[in-house]
Amino acid sequence: MSDHLNFHFTVDGDNFVSAGQASVQVKKNLRELGLSPDVIRKVSIAMYEGEINMVIHAHGGTADVNVYEDRIEIILDDEGPGIKDVELALQEGYSTASDSVRSLGFGAGMGLPNMKRYSDDMRIDTTVGVGTKITMTIRL
Amino acid sequence: MNSYRHSVVLDEDKCTGCTTCIRRCPTEAIRILNGKADIDTDRCIDCGECIRICPHKAKKAMCSKFEHYTHYKWKVALPAPALFGQFNGLEDIDDVLQGLIDIGFDEVYEVAKAAEQVTAYTRLYLKTDHIKKPVISSACPVISRLISLRFPYLKDNILPIMPPMEIAAMSAKQKAIREHPELKPEEIGVFFISPCAAKVSYIRNGYSGFKSNVDVVISMSDIYFLLLSAMKRGNPPTVGSQTGMIGIGWASSGGEATALLNDNYLSADGIENCIQVLETIENGNIPPQLEFVELNACIGGCVGGVMTIENPFIAKTRLQTVRRYLPVSRNFLSPEMNFVPPEFVTDDMPEYKPITRLSDSMGESMRMMSQIQQLKEALPGIDCGACGSPTCRAFAEDTVRGLVKGDRCCVVLQNAEKKTEAKADEGN
Ligand SMILES: Nc1ncnc2c1ncn2[C@@H]1O[C@H](COP(=O)(O)OP(=O)(O)OP(=O)(O)O)[C@@H](O)[C@H]1O
Ligand code: SF4
Ligand code: SF4
Ligand SMILES: [Mg+2]
Image (cartoon, rainbow over all chains, first blue to last red; front, top):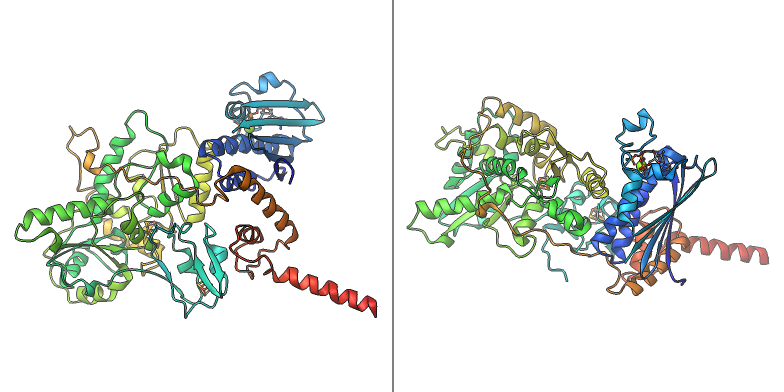
Protein backbone atom coordinates (compact mmCIF):
# COMPACT_ATOMS: atom_id res chain seq x y z
CA MET A 1 0.00 0.00 0.00
CA SER A 2 1.20 3.51 -0.76
CA ASP A 3 1.34 6.09 2.01
CA HIS A 4 -2.10 7.41 1.25
CA LEU A 5 -5.57 6.54 0.07
CA ASN A 6 -7.04 8.06 -3.03
CA PHE A 7 -10.69 8.55 -3.87
CA HIS A 8 -11.15 9.63 -7.44
CA PHE A 9 -14.32 11.07 -8.99
CA THR A 10 -15.34 12.33 -12.36
CA VAL A 11 -17.65 15.29 -11.95
CA ASP A 12 -20.18 15.47 -14.71
CA GLY A 13 -20.49 18.94 -16.21
CA ASP A 14 -23.90 20.60 -16.38
CA ASN A 15 -25.53 17.80 -14.43
CA PHE A 16 -27.08 19.49 -11.44
CA VAL A 17 -28.89 16.37 -10.38
CA SER A 18 -25.78 14.37 -9.64
CA ALA A 19 -23.78 17.36 -8.41
CA GLY A 20 -22.76 16.79 -4.81
CA GLN A 21 -22.64 13.01 -5.07
CA ALA A 22 -18.88 12.83 -4.79
CA SER A 23 -18.98 14.68 -1.50
CA VAL A 24 -21.65 12.29 -0.18
CA GLN A 25 -19.44 9.32 -1.08
CA VAL A 26 -16.39 10.96 0.47
CA LYS A 27 -18.30 11.54 3.71
CA LYS A 28 -19.20 7.86 3.83
CA ASN A 29 -15.56 6.86 3.34
CA LEU A 30 -14.29 9.29 5.94
CA ARG A 31 -16.78 7.95 8.48
CA GLU A 32 -15.43 4.48 7.81
CA LEU A 33 -11.94 5.76 8.46
CA GLY A 34 -13.18 6.98 11.82
CA LEU A 35 -12.46 10.67 11.30
CA SER A 36 -14.09 13.19 13.61
CA PRO A 37 -17.44 14.80 12.72
CA ASP A 38 -15.70 18.15 12.56
CA VAL A 39 -13.15 17.06 9.96
CA ILE A 40 -15.82 15.27 7.96
CA ARG A 41 -17.92 18.40 7.85
CA LYS A 42 -15.01 20.58 6.74
CA VAL A 43 -14.10 18.19 3.96
CA SER A 44 -17.67 17.81 2.86
CA ILE A 45 -18.36 21.54 2.61
CA ALA A 46 -15.08 22.30 0.84
CA MET A 47 -15.56 19.41 -1.52
CA TYR A 48 -19.22 20.15 -2.20
CA GLU A 49 -18.59 23.80 -3.07
CA GLY A 50 -15.68 22.85 -5.33
CA GLU A 51 -17.75 20.18 -7.04
CA ILE A 52 -20.61 22.60 -7.69
CA ASN A 53 -18.22 25.23 -9.03
CA MET A 54 -16.83 22.75 -11.54
CA VAL A 55 -20.36 21.91 -12.64
CA ILE A 56 -21.68 25.44 -13.00
CA HIS A 57 -18.55 27.32 -14.09
CA ALA A 58 -16.33 24.77 -15.81
CA HIS A 59 -18.35 21.99 -17.51
CA GLY A 60 -17.18 19.43 -14.97
CA GLY A 61 -13.76 17.98 -14.15
CA THR A 62 -12.18 15.56 -11.73
CA ALA A 63 -12.05 15.47 -7.97
CA ASP A 64 -9.40 13.62 -6.00
CA VAL A 65 -9.39 13.18 -2.26
CA ASN A 66 -6.11 11.96 -0.84
CA VAL A 67 -6.09 10.81 2.75
CA TYR A 68 -2.76 10.81 4.57
CA GLU A 69 -2.29 9.93 8.23
CA ASP A 70 -1.95 13.59 9.14
CA ARG A 71 -3.98 15.41 6.50
CA ILE A 72 -6.57 15.28 3.78
CA GLU A 73 -5.91 16.82 0.43
CA ILE A 74 -8.69 17.69 -2.00
CA ILE A 75 -7.72 18.37 -5.61
CA LEU A 76 -10.31 19.73 -8.03
CA ASP A 77 -9.13 19.91 -11.58
CA ASP A 78 -11.02 21.22 -14.59
CA GLU A 79 -10.48 22.39 -18.14
CA GLY A 80 -12.97 25.22 -17.88
CA PRO A 81 -12.59 28.91 -18.66
CA GLY A 82 -10.25 29.63 -15.77
CA ILE A 83 -10.62 32.46 -13.27
CA LYS A 84 -9.60 35.91 -14.51
CA ASP A 85 -9.15 37.63 -11.18
CA VAL A 86 -8.59 35.24 -8.30
CA GLU A 87 -8.54 37.99 -5.64
CA LEU A 88 -11.95 39.13 -6.77
CA ALA A 89 -13.36 35.60 -7.05
CA LEU A 90 -12.36 34.98 -3.43
CA GLN A 91 -14.41 37.92 -2.20
CA GLU A 92 -17.68 37.07 -0.51
CA GLY A 93 -20.59 37.86 -2.76
CA TYR A 94 -18.63 37.96 -6.02
CA SER A 95 -20.21 35.75 -8.64
CA THR A 96 -20.45 35.51 -12.39
CA ALA A 97 -23.23 32.92 -12.21
CA SER A 98 -25.94 33.28 -14.85
CA ASP A 99 -29.53 34.04 -13.97
CA SER A 100 -30.59 30.48 -14.69
CA VAL A 101 -27.96 29.14 -12.30
CA ARG A 102 -29.02 31.69 -9.68
CA SER A 103 -32.59 30.56 -9.98
CA LEU A 104 -31.37 27.16 -8.76
CA GLY A 105 -30.09 28.76 -5.60
CA PHE A 106 -26.42 29.01 -6.54
CA GLY A 107 -24.47 32.17 -7.24
CA ALA A 108 -24.32 33.81 -3.82
CA GLY A 109 -20.58 34.14 -4.29
CA MET A 110 -19.92 32.16 -1.12
CA GLY A 111 -18.36 28.99 -2.53
CA LEU A 112 -14.69 29.95 -2.79
CA PRO A 113 -14.74 31.94 0.49
CA ASN A 114 -16.21 28.91 2.24
CA MET A 115 -13.66 26.58 0.68
CA LYS A 116 -10.95 28.84 2.03
CA ARG A 117 -12.60 29.07 5.43
CA TYR A 118 -13.08 25.34 5.89
CA SER A 119 -9.65 24.25 4.69
CA ASP A 120 -6.35 24.92 6.42
CA ASP A 121 -4.66 25.75 3.17
CA MET A 122 -5.97 26.45 -0.32
CA ARG A 123 -4.03 26.94 -3.52
CA ILE A 124 -5.59 28.04 -6.80
CA ASP A 125 -3.72 27.45 -10.05
CA THR A 126 -5.69 28.87 -12.90
CA THR A 127 -5.08 29.99 -16.47
CA VAL A 128 -7.74 31.72 -18.49
CA GLY A 129 -8.80 29.50 -21.36
CA VAL A 130 -6.96 26.48 -19.98
CA GLY A 131 -8.53 25.52 -16.68
CA THR A 132 -8.42 25.65 -12.92
CA LYS A 133 -6.82 23.42 -10.32
CA ILE A 134 -7.67 23.97 -6.70
CA THR A 135 -5.78 22.15 -3.95
CA MET A 136 -7.15 22.26 -0.43
CA THR A 137 -5.55 20.73 2.64
CA ILE A 138 -7.29 19.89 5.87
CA ARG A 139 -5.01 18.86 8.70
CA LEU A 140 -6.01 16.04 11.02
CA MET B 1 -22.12 -4.43 21.21
CA ASN B 2 -25.68 -5.05 20.10
CA SER B 3 -27.19 -3.10 22.91
CA TYR B 4 -29.90 -1.36 20.89
CA ARG B 5 -33.10 -3.35 20.97
CA HIS B 6 -35.03 -3.17 17.73
CA SER B 7 -38.59 -3.87 16.79
CA VAL B 8 -38.23 -5.15 13.27
CA VAL B 9 -38.12 -8.94 13.37
CA LEU B 10 -37.81 -11.72 10.83
CA ASP B 11 -40.10 -14.69 10.39
CA GLU B 12 -37.43 -17.19 9.36
CA ASP B 13 -39.92 -19.61 7.85
CA LYS B 14 -41.24 -17.05 5.44
CA CYS B 15 -37.90 -15.55 4.37
CA THR B 16 -36.70 -17.02 1.10
CA GLY B 17 -33.47 -15.05 1.04
CA CYS B 18 -34.66 -13.31 -2.10
CA THR B 19 -32.35 -10.26 -1.50
CA THR B 20 -35.08 -7.69 -2.13
CA CYS B 21 -34.72 -6.07 1.26
CA ILE B 22 -30.93 -5.86 1.35
CA ARG B 23 -30.87 -3.51 -1.58
CA ARG B 24 -33.64 -1.29 -0.28
CA CYS B 25 -32.27 -0.75 3.21
CA PRO B 26 -31.16 2.89 3.44
CA THR B 27 -28.37 2.12 5.91
CA GLU B 28 -27.22 -1.12 4.28
CA ALA B 29 -27.98 -2.93 7.53
CA ILE B 30 -29.20 -6.22 6.04
CA ARG B 31 -27.22 -9.18 4.68
CA ILE B 32 -28.29 -12.64 3.61
CA LEU B 33 -26.56 -15.07 5.93
CA ASN B 34 -27.20 -18.79 5.58
CA GLY B 35 -30.02 -18.07 3.20
CA LYS B 36 -31.93 -15.71 5.51
CA ALA B 37 -32.07 -11.97 5.97
CA ASP B 38 -29.98 -10.83 8.91
CA ILE B 39 -30.27 -7.30 10.34
CA ASP B 40 -27.26 -5.59 11.85
CA THR B 41 -28.83 -4.06 14.94
CA ASP B 42 -26.15 -1.40 15.21
CA ARG B 43 -27.03 -0.01 11.80
CA CYS B 44 -30.80 -0.48 11.76
CA ILE B 45 -32.78 2.73 12.23
CA ASP B 46 -36.23 1.06 12.37
CA CYS B 47 -37.48 2.88 9.30
CA GLY B 48 -39.66 -0.05 8.28
CA GLU B 49 -38.60 -0.05 4.61
CA CYS B 50 -37.87 -3.79 4.68
CA ILE B 51 -41.28 -4.50 6.18
CA ARG B 52 -42.91 -2.58 3.35
CA ILE B 53 -40.83 -4.10 0.58
CA CYS B 54 -40.63 -7.79 1.51
CA PRO B 55 -42.65 -9.70 -1.09
CA HIS B 56 -43.06 -12.64 1.29
CA LYS B 57 -44.21 -10.67 4.36
CA ALA B 58 -41.30 -12.12 6.30
CA LYS B 59 -40.47 -8.91 8.15
CA LYS B 60 -42.68 -7.76 10.97
CA ALA B 61 -42.83 -5.02 13.53
CA MET B 62 -42.81 -6.36 17.03
CA CYS B 63 -45.50 -5.09 19.35
CA SER B 64 -47.38 -6.17 22.42
CA LYS B 65 -50.86 -7.61 22.40
CA PHE B 66 -53.50 -5.64 24.22
CA GLU B 67 -55.09 -8.80 25.65
CA HIS B 68 -51.89 -9.75 27.48
CA TYR B 69 -51.99 -6.81 29.80
CA THR B 70 -54.92 -7.54 32.06
CA HIS B 71 -52.89 -6.97 35.23
CA TYR B 72 -53.09 -3.18 34.98
CA LYS B 73 -55.99 -1.91 37.06
CA TRP B 74 -56.20 1.41 35.19
CA LYS B 75 -55.44 1.41 31.50
CA VAL B 76 -54.86 4.67 29.64
CA ALA B 77 -54.87 4.69 25.83
CA LEU B 78 -52.60 7.13 24.04
CA PRO B 79 -53.78 7.23 20.44
CA ALA B 80 -51.32 8.74 17.94
CA PRO B 81 -53.24 11.21 15.76
CA ALA B 82 -52.70 9.01 12.69
CA LEU B 83 -55.29 6.64 14.20
CA PHE B 84 -58.07 9.08 13.35
CA GLY B 85 -57.28 8.79 9.66
CA GLN B 86 -57.94 5.05 9.58
CA PHE B 87 -61.74 5.12 9.58
CA ASN B 88 -63.90 5.65 6.57
CA GLY B 89 -66.58 8.30 7.01
CA LEU B 90 -65.46 9.34 10.48
CA GLU B 91 -67.16 12.60 11.44
CA ASP B 92 -66.10 13.01 15.02
CA ILE B 93 -62.91 12.04 16.80
CA ASP B 94 -64.93 11.42 19.95
CA ASP B 95 -66.34 8.28 18.33
CA VAL B 96 -62.84 6.81 18.17
CA LEU B 97 -62.08 7.86 21.72
CA GLN B 98 -65.31 6.21 22.88
CA GLY B 99 -64.39 3.12 20.87
CA LEU B 100 -61.15 2.89 22.86
CA ILE B 101 -63.14 3.01 26.09
CA ASP B 102 -65.52 0.37 24.76
CA ILE B 103 -62.71 -2.07 23.98
CA GLY B 104 -61.50 -1.91 27.56
CA PHE B 105 -59.49 1.21 28.25
CA ASP B 106 -60.39 3.22 31.33
CA GLU B 107 -59.20 6.53 30.00
CA VAL B 108 -57.91 8.15 26.83
CA TYR B 109 -55.18 10.77 26.59
CA GLU B 110 -54.62 12.11 23.10
CA VAL B 111 -51.05 12.38 21.80
CA ALA B 112 -52.41 15.17 19.59
CA LYS B 113 -53.04 17.24 22.71
CA ALA B 114 -49.37 16.92 23.69
CA ALA B 115 -48.45 17.73 20.08
CA GLU B 116 -50.22 21.07 20.42
CA GLN B 117 -48.17 21.77 23.52
CA VAL B 118 -44.99 20.90 21.65
CA THR B 119 -46.04 23.28 18.89
CA ALA B 120 -46.52 26.09 21.39
CA TYR B 121 -43.18 25.41 23.06
CA THR B 122 -41.35 25.08 19.76
CA ARG B 123 -42.53 28.57 18.82
CA LEU B 124 -40.95 29.81 22.04
CA TYR B 125 -37.80 27.77 21.54
CA LEU B 126 -37.25 29.19 18.04
CA LYS B 127 -37.03 32.64 19.62
CA THR B 128 -34.24 31.57 21.98
CA ASP B 129 -30.83 33.14 21.40
CA HIS B 130 -27.76 31.10 20.49
CA ILE B 131 -29.47 27.96 19.30
CA LYS B 132 -28.29 26.03 16.27
CA LYS B 133 -30.55 26.52 13.28
CA PRO B 134 -32.29 25.09 11.43
CA VAL B 135 -33.91 23.33 14.34
CA ILE B 136 -34.75 19.75 13.37
CA SER B 137 -37.91 18.11 14.71
CA SER B 138 -37.46 15.41 17.36
CA ALA B 139 -40.76 13.68 16.69
CA CYS B 140 -39.70 10.89 14.32
CA PRO B 141 -37.25 8.60 16.13
CA VAL B 142 -35.92 7.23 12.83
CA ILE B 143 -34.55 10.65 11.99
CA SER B 144 -32.94 11.17 15.38
CA ARG B 145 -31.28 7.80 15.18
CA LEU B 146 -30.15 8.45 11.63
CA ILE B 147 -28.56 11.71 12.75
CA SER B 148 -26.75 9.95 15.57
CA LEU B 149 -25.28 7.42 13.14
CA ARG B 150 -24.63 9.48 10.06
CA PHE B 151 -24.98 13.21 10.65
CA PRO B 152 -23.17 13.80 13.91
CA TYR B 153 -22.61 17.43 13.09
CA LEU B 154 -26.36 18.03 13.15
CA LYS B 155 -27.17 16.46 16.48
CA ASP B 156 -27.26 19.81 18.26
CA ASN B 157 -29.86 21.00 15.76
CA ILE B 158 -32.42 18.54 17.10
CA LEU B 159 -35.27 20.15 19.02
CA PRO B 160 -34.55 19.41 22.69
CA ILE B 161 -38.23 19.13 23.56
CA MET B 162 -39.66 15.69 24.31
CA PRO B 163 -41.71 14.20 21.49
CA PRO B 164 -45.51 14.47 21.88
CA MET B 165 -45.88 10.78 22.68
CA GLU B 166 -43.55 11.07 25.66
CA ILE B 167 -45.19 14.23 26.97
CA ALA B 168 -48.59 12.59 26.63
CA ALA B 169 -47.36 9.53 28.51
CA MET B 170 -45.90 11.63 31.31
CA SER B 171 -49.01 13.77 31.62
CA ALA B 172 -51.37 10.80 31.43
CA LYS B 173 -49.53 8.97 34.16
CA GLN B 174 -49.39 12.01 36.43
CA LYS B 175 -53.08 12.63 35.88
CA ALA B 176 -54.04 9.04 36.70
CA ILE B 177 -51.88 9.01 39.83
CA ARG B 178 -53.43 12.28 40.94
CA GLU B 179 -57.01 11.25 40.27
CA HIS B 180 -56.71 7.71 41.58
CA PRO B 181 -54.90 7.80 44.89
CA GLU B 182 -56.29 4.32 45.59
CA LEU B 183 -54.01 2.87 42.91
CA LYS B 184 -50.33 2.08 43.13
CA PRO B 185 -48.35 3.69 40.28
CA GLU B 186 -47.45 0.26 38.90
CA GLU B 187 -51.12 -0.58 38.59
CA ILE B 188 -51.52 2.20 36.04
CA GLY B 189 -50.69 1.18 32.48
CA VAL B 190 -50.05 3.72 29.74
CA PHE B 191 -50.64 2.17 26.29
CA PHE B 192 -49.33 3.95 23.22
CA ILE B 193 -51.21 3.08 20.03
CA SER B 194 -48.41 3.25 17.55
CA PRO B 195 -48.23 3.82 13.81
CA CYS B 196 -44.71 2.40 13.54
CA ALA B 197 -41.92 0.15 14.75
CA ALA B 198 -39.62 3.09 15.35
CA LYS B 199 -41.70 4.35 18.24
CA VAL B 200 -41.57 0.89 19.78
CA SER B 201 -37.78 0.92 19.65
CA TYR B 202 -37.61 4.45 20.99
CA ILE B 203 -39.75 3.48 23.97
CA ARG B 204 -37.56 0.47 24.68
CA ASN B 205 -34.22 2.22 24.33
CA GLY B 206 -34.42 5.99 24.27
CA TYR B 207 -31.26 7.41 22.79
CA SER B 208 -28.94 7.45 25.77
CA GLY B 209 -30.39 5.74 28.78
CA PHE B 210 -33.88 6.99 29.49
CA LYS B 211 -37.00 5.39 30.86
CA SER B 212 -40.15 6.02 28.88
CA ASN B 213 -43.44 6.63 30.62
CA VAL B 214 -45.11 4.41 28.05
CA ASP B 215 -45.65 0.96 29.55
CA VAL B 216 -47.03 -0.94 26.58
CA VAL B 217 -46.99 -0.29 22.84
CA ILE B 218 -49.72 -1.73 20.70
CA SER B 219 -49.95 -1.58 16.98
CA MET B 220 -52.64 0.42 15.27
CA SER B 221 -53.32 -2.45 12.90
CA ASP B 222 -53.61 -4.95 15.78
CA ILE B 223 -56.51 -3.23 17.49
CA TYR B 224 -58.07 -1.91 14.31
CA PHE B 225 -60.85 -4.45 13.85
CA LEU B 226 -61.62 -4.62 17.53
CA LEU B 227 -61.95 -0.86 17.57
CA LEU B 228 -63.95 -0.73 14.39
CA SER B 229 -66.58 -3.13 15.66
CA ALA B 230 -66.80 -1.25 18.96
CA MET B 231 -67.34 1.97 17.04
CA LYS B 232 -70.06 0.33 14.95
CA ARG B 233 -72.07 -0.17 18.12
CA GLY B 234 -72.34 3.61 18.13
CA ASN B 235 -72.28 4.21 21.88
CA PRO B 236 -72.66 7.95 22.51
CA PRO B 237 -69.32 9.50 23.42
CA THR B 238 -68.66 9.97 27.12
CA VAL B 239 -65.22 11.42 26.45
CA GLY B 240 -64.46 14.57 24.50
CA SER B 241 -61.45 15.30 22.34
CA GLN B 242 -59.05 17.93 23.62
CA THR B 243 -57.31 18.75 20.41
CA GLY B 244 -57.76 21.14 17.54
CA MET B 245 -56.60 21.24 13.95
CA ILE B 246 -52.96 21.59 14.86
CA GLY B 247 -52.76 18.44 16.94
CA ILE B 248 -54.51 16.34 14.30
CA GLY B 249 -52.34 17.92 11.62
CA TRP B 250 -49.23 16.37 13.18
CA ALA B 251 -50.25 13.01 11.69
CA SER B 252 -49.31 14.09 8.19
CA SER B 253 -46.11 15.45 6.78
CA GLY B 254 -45.94 19.23 7.09
CA GLY B 255 -48.40 19.38 9.98
CA GLU B 256 -45.82 20.05 12.64
CA ALA B 257 -43.95 22.66 10.57
CA THR B 258 -46.94 24.65 9.31
CA ALA B 259 -48.31 24.87 12.85
CA LEU B 260 -45.34 27.04 13.80
CA LEU B 261 -46.72 29.97 11.81
CA ASN B 262 -43.25 30.63 10.52
CA ASP B 263 -42.65 30.58 6.77
CA ASN B 264 -39.02 29.57 7.03
CA TYR B 265 -39.55 25.88 7.30
CA LEU B 266 -38.84 22.79 5.27
CA SER B 267 -40.74 19.56 5.56
CA ALA B 268 -39.80 16.33 3.85
CA ASP B 269 -41.05 12.78 4.06
CA GLY B 270 -39.83 9.38 2.93
CA ILE B 271 -36.51 8.14 4.27
CA GLU B 272 -34.48 8.76 1.10
CA ASN B 273 -35.74 12.34 0.85
CA CYS B 274 -34.92 12.91 4.49
CA ILE B 275 -31.38 11.63 3.97
CA GLN B 276 -30.91 13.99 1.04
CA VAL B 277 -32.16 16.94 3.06
CA LEU B 278 -29.79 16.10 5.91
CA GLU B 279 -26.85 15.80 3.49
CA THR B 280 -27.71 19.22 2.11
CA ILE B 281 -28.00 20.83 5.54
CA GLU B 282 -24.66 19.31 6.51
CA ASN B 283 -23.06 20.77 3.37
CA GLY B 284 -24.41 24.16 4.34
CA ASN B 285 -26.26 24.50 1.07
CA ILE B 286 -29.59 25.66 2.48
CA PRO B 287 -31.32 29.03 2.56
CA PRO B 288 -29.68 30.93 5.43
CA GLN B 289 -33.02 32.02 6.86
CA LEU B 290 -34.27 28.43 7.29
CA GLU B 291 -35.48 28.00 10.87
CA PHE B 292 -37.24 24.69 11.16
CA VAL B 293 -36.97 21.31 9.48
CA GLU B 294 -39.61 18.63 9.87
CA LEU B 295 -38.54 15.20 8.66
CA ASN B 296 -40.74 12.12 8.63
CA ALA B 297 -39.25 8.77 7.69
CA CYS B 298 -42.56 7.57 6.31
CA ILE B 299 -44.08 8.79 3.09
CA GLY B 300 -46.93 11.11 3.97
CA GLY B 301 -45.79 11.37 7.60
CA CYS B 302 -47.01 9.14 10.44
CA VAL B 303 -50.15 8.24 8.46
CA GLY B 304 -47.66 6.28 6.34
CA GLY B 305 -46.30 4.27 9.29
CA VAL B 306 -45.94 0.50 8.81
CA MET B 307 -48.54 -0.27 11.45
CA THR B 308 -51.28 1.79 9.89
CA ILE B 309 -54.03 0.27 7.81
CA GLU B 310 -54.99 2.88 5.31
CA ASN B 311 -53.01 4.34 2.42
CA PRO B 312 -51.30 7.51 3.75
CA PHE B 313 -52.86 9.84 1.22
CA ILE B 314 -56.38 8.59 1.85
CA ALA B 315 -55.79 8.85 5.58
CA LYS B 316 -54.58 12.41 5.12
CA THR B 317 -57.69 13.37 3.21
CA ARG B 318 -59.87 11.87 5.92
CA LEU B 319 -58.04 13.83 8.56
CA GLN B 320 -58.75 16.99 6.60
CA THR B 321 -62.45 16.19 6.84
CA VAL B 322 -62.28 15.49 10.56
CA ARG B 323 -60.29 18.67 11.20
CA ARG B 324 -62.66 20.88 9.28
CA TYR B 325 -64.83 22.10 12.15
CA LEU B 326 -62.25 21.99 14.89
CA PRO B 327 -60.75 25.06 16.55
CA VAL B 328 -57.18 25.79 15.46
CA SER B 329 -55.78 24.58 18.75
CA ARG B 330 -57.10 23.70 22.17
CA ASN B 331 -53.80 23.90 23.97
CA PHE B 332 -52.46 27.42 24.18
CA LEU B 333 -49.86 28.70 26.56
CA SER B 334 -50.65 31.53 28.88
CA PRO B 335 -49.32 34.77 27.38
CA GLU B 336 -46.82 35.35 30.19
CA MET B 337 -45.15 31.97 29.51
CA ASN B 338 -41.84 32.77 27.87
CA PHE B 339 -39.65 29.72 28.28
CA VAL B 340 -39.88 25.98 27.78
CA PRO B 341 -40.50 24.38 31.19
CA PRO B 342 -37.71 22.00 32.22
CA GLU B 343 -40.00 18.97 32.49
CA PHE B 344 -40.63 19.19 28.75
CA VAL B 345 -36.98 19.54 27.85
CA THR B 346 -35.15 16.32 27.22
CA ASP B 347 -31.51 15.62 27.78
CA ASP B 348 -31.86 12.24 26.15
CA MET B 349 -30.34 13.29 22.87
CA PRO B 350 -28.79 10.97 20.31
CA GLU B 351 -25.04 10.56 20.72
CA TYR B 352 -22.77 10.08 17.72
CA LYS B 353 -21.96 6.42 17.24
CA PRO B 354 -19.23 5.82 14.66
CA ILE B 355 -20.60 2.38 13.84
CA THR B 356 -19.27 2.18 10.31
CA ARG B 357 -15.67 2.76 11.41
CA LEU B 358 -13.42 0.03 10.06
CA SER B 359 -11.01 -0.04 12.97
CA ASP B 360 -10.09 1.97 16.07
CA SER B 361 -6.77 2.91 14.55
CA MET B 362 -6.56 5.31 11.65
CA GLY B 363 -3.59 3.49 10.12
CA GLU B 364 -5.41 0.17 10.22
CA SER B 365 -8.60 1.74 8.84
CA MET B 366 -6.59 3.13 5.94
CA ARG B 367 -5.06 -0.25 5.21
CA MET B 368 -8.48 -1.87 5.27
CA MET B 369 -9.97 0.82 3.04
CA SER B 370 -7.18 0.27 0.56
CA GLN B 371 -7.93 -3.47 0.52
CA ILE B 372 -11.61 -2.72 0.00
CA GLN B 373 -10.76 -0.54 -2.99
CA GLN B 374 -8.61 -3.27 -4.51
CA LEU B 375 -11.20 -5.95 -3.96
CA LYS B 376 -13.92 -3.80 -5.40
CA GLU B 377 -11.92 -3.28 -8.57
CA ALA B 378 -11.98 -7.03 -9.12
CA LEU B 379 -15.76 -7.28 -8.69
CA PRO B 380 -18.21 -6.86 -11.58
CA GLY B 381 -19.91 -3.78 -10.15
CA ILE B 382 -23.43 -4.87 -11.03
CA ASP B 383 -24.69 -4.87 -7.43
CA CYS B 384 -26.79 -7.99 -7.99
CA GLY B 385 -26.97 -8.95 -4.32
CA ALA B 386 -26.50 -12.67 -4.96
CA CYS B 387 -23.55 -12.75 -2.57
CA GLY B 388 -25.81 -11.56 0.23
CA SER B 389 -24.39 -8.03 0.45
CA PRO B 390 -26.32 -5.07 -0.94
CA THR B 391 -23.65 -3.83 -3.36
CA CYS B 392 -20.29 -4.98 -4.70
CA ARG B 393 -18.68 -2.27 -2.60
CA ALA B 394 -20.45 -3.58 0.51
CA PHE B 395 -19.35 -7.13 -0.34
CA ALA B 396 -15.75 -5.96 -0.59
CA GLU B 397 -16.14 -4.23 2.75
CA ASP B 398 -17.79 -7.25 4.39
CA THR B 399 -14.93 -9.41 3.16
CA VAL B 400 -12.25 -7.09 4.52
CA ARG B 401 -14.10 -6.82 7.82
CA GLY B 402 -14.02 -10.61 7.94
CA LEU B 403 -17.80 -10.93 8.01
CA VAL B 404 -17.92 -13.12 4.92
CA LYS B 405 -15.54 -15.20 2.91
CA GLY B 406 -14.55 -13.30 -0.23
CA ASP B 407 -15.21 -16.16 -2.64
CA ARG B 408 -18.96 -15.83 -2.85
CA CYS B 409 -19.25 -13.64 -5.93
CA CYS B 410 -20.92 -15.92 -8.47
CA VAL B 411 -20.09 -13.62 -11.39
CA VAL B 412 -16.38 -13.76 -10.60
CA LEU B 413 -16.61 -17.53 -10.20
CA GLN B 414 -18.45 -17.90 -13.48
CA ASN B 415 -15.94 -15.76 -15.34
CA ALA B 416 -13.09 -17.80 -13.89
CA GLU B 417 -14.84 -20.97 -15.04
CA LYS B 418 -15.29 -19.60 -18.53
CA LYS B 419 -11.61 -18.75 -18.67
CA THR B 420 -10.62 -22.27 -17.67
CA GLU B 421 -12.99 -23.69 -20.27
CA ALA B 422 -11.56 -21.41 -22.94
CA LYS B 423 -8.08 -22.54 -22.00
CA ALA B 424 -9.13 -26.14 -22.20
CA ASP B 425 -10.67 -25.47 -25.63
CA GLU B 426 -7.45 -23.88 -26.82
CA GLY B 427 -5.61 -26.97 -25.72
CA ASN B 428 -7.81 -29.16 -27.93
N1 LIG C 1 -13.80 26.10 -11.37
C1 LIG C 1 -14.02 27.36 -11.80
N2 LIG C 1 -13.79 27.70 -13.09
C2 LIG C 1 -14.03 28.95 -13.52
N3 LIG C 1 -14.50 29.95 -12.72
C3 LIG C 1 -14.73 29.68 -11.45
C4 LIG C 1 -14.52 28.38 -10.91
N4 LIG C 1 -14.85 28.41 -9.59
C5 LIG C 1 -15.24 29.67 -9.33
N5 LIG C 1 -15.17 30.44 -10.43
C6 LIG C 1 -15.47 31.88 -10.54
O1 LIG C 1 -15.38 32.46 -9.24
C7 LIG C 1 -16.62 33.05 -8.89
C8 LIG C 1 -16.85 32.91 -7.43
O2 LIG C 1 -17.02 31.56 -7.09
P1 LIG C 1 -17.85 31.16 -5.80
O3 LIG C 1 -17.91 29.70 -5.69
O4 LIG C 1 -17.29 31.93 -4.64
O5 LIG C 1 -19.28 31.77 -6.09
P2 LIG C 1 -20.42 31.21 -7.05
O6 LIG C 1 -20.09 29.83 -7.48
O7 LIG C 1 -20.60 32.18 -8.15
O8 LIG C 1 -21.67 31.21 -6.11
P3 LIG C 1 -21.97 30.15 -4.93
O9 LIG C 1 -20.77 29.33 -4.75
O10 LIG C 1 -22.27 30.98 -3.71
O11 LIG C 1 -23.14 29.38 -5.39
C9 LIG C 1 -17.63 32.35 -9.75
O12 LIG C 1 -18.78 33.13 -9.96
C10 LIG C 1 -16.87 32.12 -11.03
O13 LIG C 1 -16.81 33.29 -11.82
S1 SF4 D 1 -37.25 -9.34 1.21
FE1 SF4 D 1 -35.71 -9.88 2.74
S2 SF4 D 1 -36.90 -10.72 4.48
FE2 SF4 D 1 -38.26 -10.72 2.68
S3 SF4 D 1 -38.01 -12.79 1.84
FE3 SF4 D 1 -36.59 -11.45 0.72
S4 SF4 D 1 -34.65 -11.66 1.87
FE4 SF4 D 1 -36.28 -12.48 3.21
S1 SF4 E 1 -42.75 9.17 10.29
FE1 SF4 E 1 -44.04 8.72 12.07
S2 SF4 E 1 -44.80 6.65 11.66
FE2 SF4 E 1 -43.03 6.94 10.33
S3 SF4 E 1 -41.27 6.16 11.50
FE3 SF4 E 1 -41.38 8.37 11.89
S4 SF4 E 1 -42.60 8.50 13.78
FE4 SF4 E 1 -42.97 6.45 12.96
MG1 LIG F 1 -19.66 28.34 -6.07
